[in-house]
Length: 239
Image (tube, rainbow, N blue to C red; front, side):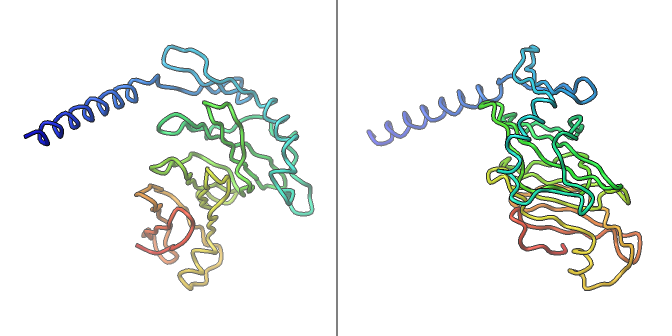
C-alpha cells in the first residue's frame, strides 16, 4: 500500500512538472524577422514588437572580413577570375529562416561574377548573439531552408543561372560544416546513366527523423525519382 502511495505521488509530481514545462514552452514569445532597407538590415522582434536582435549587412561584412581566413582554409573564388570578397556582400538574401524553436536564425549572402553565384550560409544564436558561417561556399542561390527535426541540420536546394534546383546541400549546424553537396552529375553517376545537359531539379525536400527525402527529375521522361539520404550525407538511395 505504501509503495502504491509513493508511486502515485511521484507520478503526480512528474505530471505537474511536465505541465509547467509545456506551458512555459508554448507561451514563449513568438519571434518574427523583419527584412529591412532592401536587405541591408534584419531585425528579430517578439510578438509585442520588442527588439531581440538587430543586424546590418555592414556589421556582417566587417565580421566576415575579420574572420574570413580563419573560417576558410582555402579562399573561396570564381576560379581564375577573382576571389570572393566580403565587401561584395551588399545585402542579406531573402532566404532567412528562424528555427522551429526560434533559438537560431539562418540566412544567406552571396557574391556574383561571370554568370555564377556563390552563396554562404550564416547562423545567428539569438540567445548568445553569436554569428558563424558554414565552412564551405555554395555554388548557386538559396531559396529557402528546411530544418531537421532536431534543428541540428539544414537542407536546401540551390538555383543556378541554368535552372532552379540545380544542386542540393545538407549542413551540420553544430559543426558548421557541409555534409553533402549533390549535383546532376552525382545523380547520373549513381544511376549509371550518361546524359548531356541533365537538369536534376532537386525539390520537395522533407525530413523524417535523420533522413532527408527529396525528388529529382527523370533522365528519360517527365516522371520524378524519389530519393533519400542520411543527414550525414551517407546512404544515398532511390526509394
